[in-house]
Image (cartoon, rainbow, N blue to C red; front, top):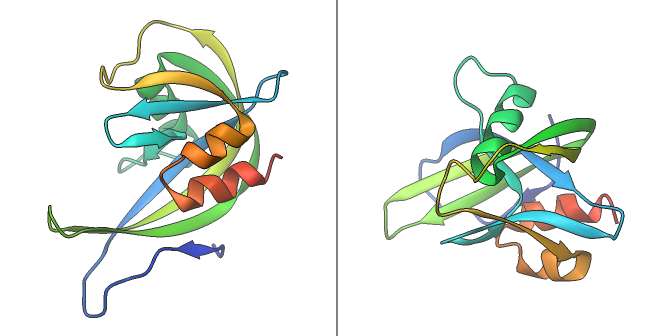
Length: 142
């Protein structure tokens, strides 16, 4: 898959590749669903586990981060981002597949108790997202 690449790799540094799936969700009022986390604001989604499809991972991750079920409407695109965390010695290339989705049902609180589902106006969500490749995906549904 080919798509834009965000971030700058460090020369000579080995990067672990992490495949991810993310939901881009906009309601009728033009607000965007995001997760507020201790690290900042992100789209719902996360890593694909071994043996999972991108879609299965997205359903699981969206539930873990929001406590909600989602419906996948369409595939929006693919983008990657280099993540450099020298303090923790973690270097990853996150390869994200982004899907336009809708929230269908709240099942309960988020499984990850340090995450909170928040609806934000489009521009506020765009400006608040901590990952540039999440901002890129949000622009696809503007």
